[in-house]
Length: 121
Image (cartoon, rainbow, N blue to C red):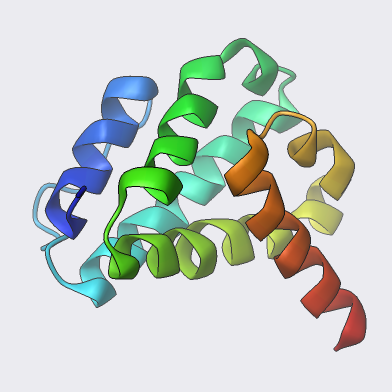
């Protein structure tokens, strides 16, 4: 199982242009979600600049986090990464479909859950 402390190093390996804050303790849910929010901003910036589609390893890694991660990892990806990304879409004129088409099956399911939740609220 992938643990909380392994998430940010895996994502950084998949996207070396992301500079994580080494002072944040990502072995806690709060610290991990803080860094995942920063990573969400990084991904939205890549998409805004039409570079995200070229970063396929990111989506393989996110899928791995959903299929191999412990429960707190999956929850953190959904809340810290996906919810934050979804909140940023409209201000950057990016559609949820643009992100959704890049995701793998398990992560896409959770992306759609975030999308449906936000449509209802």
